[in-house]
Image (cartoon, rainbow, N blue to C red; front, side, top):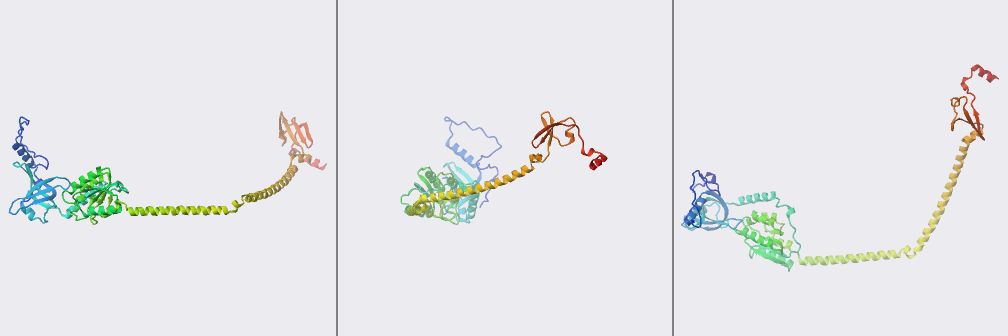
Amino acid sequence: MTEPRTPSQTVGRATPGQPERTDQPQAAAPANSAEQPYPVRSVAIKVAQWIDRLGSIWVEGQITQINLRPGTRTAFLVLRDTSADMSLSVTCDPDLIRKSPIPLQEGSRVVVYGKLSFFTGRGTLSLRVIEIRPVGIGELLARIERLKALLAAEGLFDPRLKRPIPFLPKTIGLITGRASAAERDVLTVARNRWPAVRFEIRNTAVQGPTAVTQMLEALAQLDRDPTVEVIVLARGGGSVEDLLPFSDEALCRAIVAATTPIVSAIGHEPDNPLSDLVADLRAATPTDAAKRVVPDAAAELAGVRDMRARSAAALRGWVDRETRALTQLRSRPVLADPLREIDRRREEIERLRASARRIAEQYIRTEATATRHLREKLTAVGPAATLARGYAVVQRLAGTERHVVRTIEDAPAGSQLRIRVADGAVSAAALGTKALGAQRPTENTETRRS
C-alpha cells in the first residue's frame, strides 16, 4: 500500500478549499456571454482543474453503503455526514476494506485520506482514498468528552436554562423510532395514566447516518406547533455507537434553542448521551418519561378526594371547637349575671376611695405638723426675733440705695444712717468712727478698772 501523504507533505498544493497558487502568469479567460457560451467540455475541464488543486485531504463520515465485488480492483463506498443530509462517493482499493484492523460495515464511523477527482465524461465527483482509519469507541468517547467540555463552558448545562414541564400538557410531541418499544411504552403508560392525553408523533431514525437529520427536522416541526407543550425524545437504550446521534452537537444546540420544554428519555444509564444534559428534564427510560410528563388520573382523583375529606374534617373540627367555646362562654358567671361583676367592682372602688382618702388625710396632717415645726424654728432664728432681743440693723443711705453697715469703713463720718429696731426705724448721722482695736492699752486698762 502506498504511504499516504498528509496535506503538509503535498508539494505544490494549496490548502483545502483554496485554489493552487502559481508564479506563472495565466492567460486571460475569453469573455463569456450568451453569444460566446462555454461548451460543456470546457466547464467540465475547469471544474476538474479546480478540484484537482484541492489536493489530498482528510475526511470524516459514516459509511452508509459498501459495494465490494469479488475480482474487482475498486471498491465503492458512500460516505455520509452524521449531522447533515449530505453524502460523498468514495473509491478505494478493496484491500483497504478487507485488511482493516476493525471490520468495516455500513454504519461505521471512519476517517479517510485521499484526493477528490471530477470525472469529466460523466460529470461526477468521487473521492479516491488511500487510507481508512476506523473511529474506535475510545476515540468516539473522547470526542464526546471534548464536546461535553465545550458545551459546559458555553453554559448550556446551566440549571437556570431548564424550562419547567407543564403539569398537564395539551399535546405531547414524541420523537422516536417507528413501531419501537420506546414508542409503545410511552403511549401505553401515558394513556393508562391519563386516557385523554394527546400525542403528536414523529417517527424518525434513532441510529445511523440519517438519524440526526431526521430528528432535527422533527424537532423543528414540533417546536413550531403551538399546541405542543412538551417534546419527548425517546429511545430504548443501546450501545455507544447506536447512541452517537444523541450526542451530536447540532442536536444538542437545537434542544437548547427550542422554545418548547424537551424531555430526554434515551434509557441508557451507564453512558448518558449529551442530550440528557442539555434537555430540560432527563428521564431514565421512556416509561419514566411518560410518568413524569403525564399525571396519573387515578392518583390525582384520589388526591382530590383526600383533600376534600381533609377539608371537610377540618371544617367540622373548627365548627365543633367554636361551638364548645360558645358553650363555655355562655356558662360563665359574667354572662349569667352581668351586673354582679359591676356591683362587685363598685364596692371595691368605694373601698379603695375611702382608703385613699384616709391615707391622703393622714399624709396632710403629718406634713402640716412638720410645716408648723419648721415655721417655729424659722421664727426663732429669724431677724425679727433677733431685733426683739435688742439688736439693730444699721444701713447707710446713699441716695435711694441702702447698704448694710458691717464695718466702720462702710459708715464714715457724716454718713446718713437708718437704724432698724424691733418696732421701727431711726434716722441718724455718723459723727465719727472708732475701731475697737485702736484704744490705747493704758486707757483700756483704766476704763476696765473704773
